[in-house]
Length: 184
Image 1 (cartoon, rainbow, N blue to C red):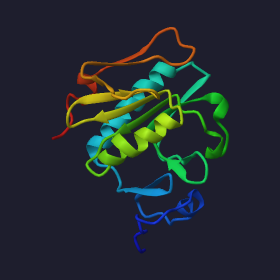
Image 2 (image 1 turned 30 degrees about the horizontal axis):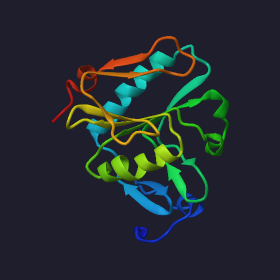
Image 3 (image 1 turned 60 degrees about the vertical axis):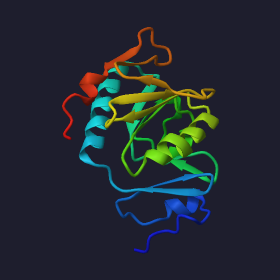
């Protein structure tokens, strides 16, 4: 397969028609973002976060946490695949097209995704009104927490917190348990 031209302006329909090649293709305002399959540290962090969020949301029928891949689209030139995301259960159907509200979006940084996650996708998530966006940095052992109106992130280095919609208690995860024994 020939690698797509990343300088070209794409549409969601074109990106969805790409053949499976192991890469993740995302689109922000027509700009194609291409990342290779994630590494082991990335997947370990995603798995740990998914397990903790799933446990937190257990018995909570109003919210659902899901992992990538997922084709979240907003219009004809925006398609993202957050590593993890929490959505209202009312958005669930057999099609990703019904998923429009991300209550929490999580991206775990990899060397190939840092620019896209920190700048391009963050700005899109803020414009789209994603309530909370976590940029998880395993190398620095920290999480950047963003909200739609933030100009700067909250930098979390000890305990990560998030308050799920209609939950009395907050999600809490000690970052030492998230990053503690990752391979270097």
